[in-house]
Image (cartoon, rainbow, N blue to C red; front, side):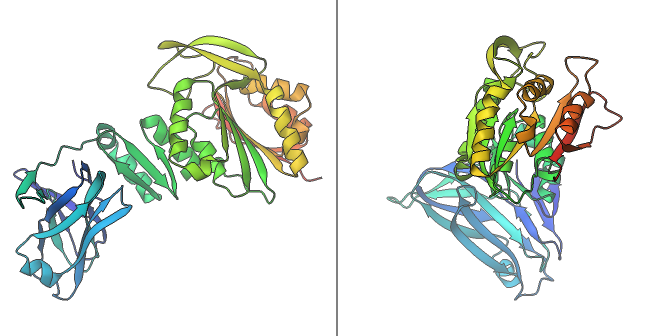
Length: 398
């Protein structure tokens, strides 16, 4: 598999090429994300320029990078004359003193048309004998990436970039990095980073409580806000909690603000054994899935956990903001918050509510105590989906 963002793929008898027209600028080829040990290498870039390309015009750049684009090891700027004189092939030699993941990239400037062969032959030079050894480039297909290529292209158009290997996909959005494993992750990316569902803006510093941390993307998004001093995140299930820790490890500076807890919040302290599935981390309530493997989860009374954070925010003169997406537990959490009179100490909330457990309960059972506590509520529940929705609540100015 190859990776390309610019040009049109042409396949002639199994020989894949990317054809670029004049005016098309961008990444023609990148990848193949190949791990190489220390040594000296030569990579060949088969590129054929249109004879009409002006000799002095730089029509493309080629380079070799390691560490997913962090380390630049070799590069060349190629004019029309360079390509015509090179007899359809340009080589770059590079040395690496550490094992790394490498890309051999071609980027078009848009100055002229050319065709780049997808296959870029790689050779290693034995430093003792000088012998040149052929290296076979492995098939680097990532099945999930290949199956959902149109969705990934959509995200790329909206500012995302992706590092793709056969085993992993790492997304990057404005410097925040995270693993992508399945279609659920793409849904969450869209909600958080494209639709800005949790983009709280306040003048004062704030403490954020993330109830339903899942894989930690909302916590990372909110923690990147310089006015956010702390994020206290809660997730009872082991799989999404472990995934969150992996995502936090990719963002050590931002993650330093996040305090992840492997327990959920609810109406009371309790321990439950529920069924969980490895292929789903969203849409699962604390009552578990219908099928899967048993897991023991722990729930703590929400008011007992949140009360110290309320006092902490008040003592420091900070706002307290709550994000809540906990698949039905929100109704029990609201009961205990109301019982302990904590709504008056909360400045803003976003609640994704769910009608999992009771036909009688609706978002109005959540909105009523908010209005009573002096909040203005924006109910974004869609009439086409009366079983779940989104509500924003902001404390009214006095």
